[in-house]
Image (cartoon, rainbow, N blue to C red):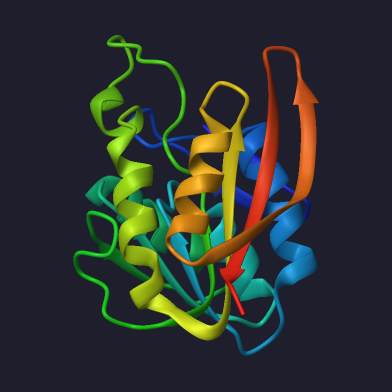
Length: 191
């Protein structure tokens, strides 16, 4: 299977999350935020769409995913599109020590579906909670986080958790699709 985004082409596999409206909305928000030379982390990289787009924009990109197949696919897609991306297998920040100017994350939020391979990793609320608890250690002083949330998730709770972690938030992109409303939150350190 192939997925095309603008002039880029991505190979897809059944056991790696495929880009959809959520990934595309996050990509649009990232395009407005990113600057050449930024250190960018694509958390939960999937097939590498956001990582490759960040590299295309001139960023120094690290991509991470708990799924080793996703990490290999991200590297393959980056190479196929002519970009360099550092990719690591990591359960959130477990194998990441650096600080980043921009961290993008399309976390698991879909309701459980036991028929989807790997759904146990995609649907746990604790993933977002653990991300928020650890993200401050990996954010540069002026760094930003772009986090996708859905009307299917308790977005207000996520905003409160980010604020409790010392981060202010604002909605920077939003799109209604037939079954949900997708929003991208931009979070940064509270001054």
